[in-house]
Amino acid sequence: MFKSQTFDNGLRVVTAEMPHMESVSLGVWINAGVRNEQKATNGISHMLEHLVFKGTKKRDAVRLKQDIEGRGGSFNGFTAEEFTCYLVKVLAKDVELGMDVLSDMALNPLLKEYDIAKEKQVIIEEINMYRDMPSHYIHELLTEILWPDHPLGLPLAGTVESVSSISRKDLAGYQRLFYNPANMVVAAAGNADAGKIQELSKKYFRAEKSCRHLPKPAAAFKTQSSPSAAIHYKKTEQTHVAIGIHAPHRFHPDRYVVSLLNVILGANMSSRLFQEVREKKALCYEIGSSVRRYQDAAAFVISAGVDYDKLVKSLEVILGELKKIKKTPVGGNELTRAKEYYKGQLALALEDTMSAMLWYGEKTATREKEFDVREIMNKIDSIDAGDISRVASSIFTDENLNLAVIGPVEKKKRIEEALHIR
Image 1 (cartoon, one colour):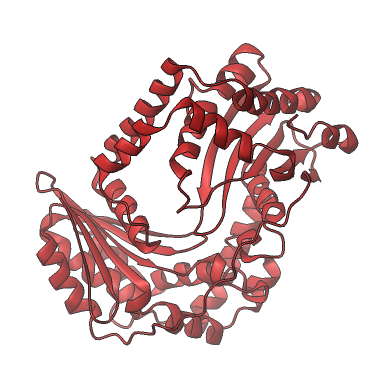
Image 2: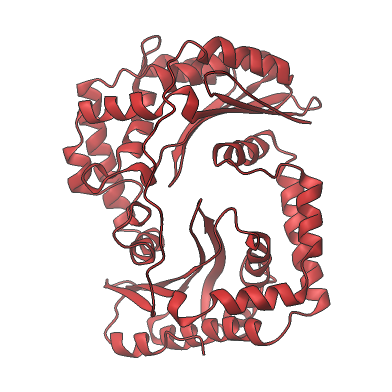
């Protein structure tokens, strides 16, 4: 059972009661991510996420780990474009300890100069590591051309230059501004009563001051009018490709249609791209698609690793599949399989306390309104082949098309010429 409450100080609390489970997954969500950053301090959200694990006013770094892991639990954190999340999974009897540790980390980080200096070096190594991983770096290149001159186009970890320049004053100011109850969500899923979670949230977060007048992030306007490409030469054994297509945002009425398009085209091994590009034509080992959604923007992303000599052919086949789904209605059996896959994956995810916490927490943090799983599944069932064709025709266009390539590329013009959905 799902329950939610908003306190007077603006803190939102959401609980998915799963009394048959042994564990509880807790998350503290902050509406602050790379979207809230400036170029000069790019990476500050991610750096702050690292630093809260280095110690608080109540616990040093070692005790933070021991308090949770010493009870058999686990904890972590991650930074995204529009939020940051800190999370723990503990036995039901330790739920208050989990809430205590999470609130301590989010509200009372020490941010010592010594820790900041050390963590900068760690993050710079992280940036360099991902630069050496084409399968990861390809998505940074794609993001830059999807949203140029906008925070959504910035790398989550920042750059070597921006990370090096961030000061303790910057970090403390950012933490004071965004880490306040009016900008936070406490999410819980598992063997915990909603009333208990609300009581603990009030105990550990109520005393904090709220700031309800936070700076709004810049709107993400699509300015693209023709295909765009970023081709990065690197002597690799495999050429990495990512195609990004502007799509309906998180709140758009067609978002579920795009989800089914994703399933049909590339979300699993029975998808069209996997079958056509890998199984039938043997052009790659790995290929898939996904959807990135934000409050006013989104991208349908296709990524693959191919032999350089097969790059142009692979692009032609991939884009040919996008053209095909625009022109030829999806058959009834294929559409039914896609719907069942979507619904099945959602149902299976919500059986797990951590997956459920992440699902409900993200929806609450981003202010989505739909939490009724049956209602969502009914919407999926109501989508027909005409909806698939209509949305595919609206987004799979040349002016929405972006391509990033990493590999030993010599014939850029030939690649750019292939970048069309006719």
